[in-house]
Image 1 (cartoon, rainbow, N blue to C red):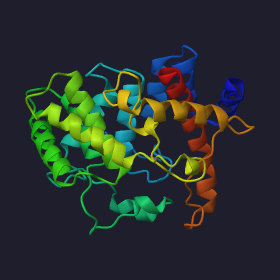
Image 2: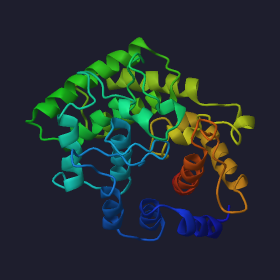
Image 3: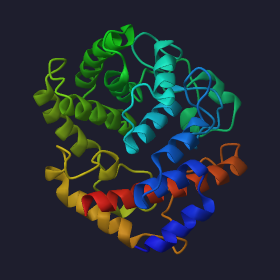
Length: 302
């Protein structure tokens, strides 16, 4: 794996946000630079849009794009509850915009008016999803005032989400599973074990992860599949030990499949879905994001 080629690509092609993330994670860069770049995607209602998630160019706030922001907040270790970005997100979630009383919407109607991937099409008849709700719950539990209605709601939603997980076990959606892993990890790390049975949750997730990981590694380089890095972020994960072999294989895969320009293959596309020009731009954005994810994974697991 050629680190310098990866670095060169990011410096030449990344969005300001992703360049700031690279510098923060690998070069001792500033957390504030990341947050300043992230704030450019935040709307007045506190939610995020503007293609923060590169497969949807909707400028409107949406739960999915707001979830992406929460992941970057976690990545840089922002803990200050009174930070304007965090308070804005809480404001958006408390407004109950794009919320049906149980889940935040996976897609929103205005997606259909802008360039986007087909999986972000809005369909009012679509079944409710816990992607990103199960993950947004963790953000609320971490940052909301414990006396607030939003915090109380999050506790209720935790129990509802877990009931849904058990009723739909095992799930096929990688996005749903990833959000439930994040919910489990937050509850465990914060000793919030009075909400649900974490021992049972862990056992079910161990089975769920084995169910959803793609063990046919021959298609990893050409198809969008579930690699362990999507669900297992470090050796400290409760799910690392029994997946150690496939995690080690992914490290080898990363080291052996880098392209000459320093990137890795983006194995999904929406260029045939009316927006070839926008997809070419988004694909380039994704390349920097995946460089960051892959190198961070190597540094964490190796």
